[in-house]
Image 1 (cartoon, rainbow, N blue to C red):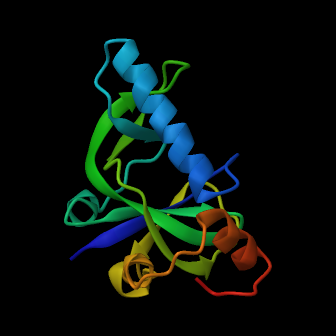
Image 2 (cartoon, rainbow, N blue to C red):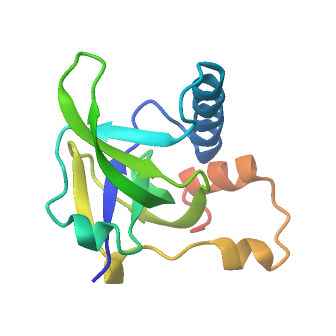
Length: 147
């Protein structure tokens, strides 16, 4: 049974900021001769690994709402910069926007049952909406639009 993870995206103000940071990270890894993969390190390893790897995604909370997700490719043992062991959540590079879902601040990550996960906005974007992403995010922050 698929289960997702929810994580705060600290220091990021928009989906575009996250996208830009991840592109720079992948380029830096490639330049350093390392495997260019997005691996988010976290101290706790999910106990429901099989459920997370069965189609789960990491849902990002940005400015108080879940507004994006990335498919989880793998969970592996990793090491923090200070040498401590941790869990590496390997993410698909594709960043998918979701319908905003308010979420309070919390530490670490939380499970998100598949039935409670916000819907993707790909269908809305494919419907011919040509509003610039920055404008959409500003209107969303002002609570003038929902998606």
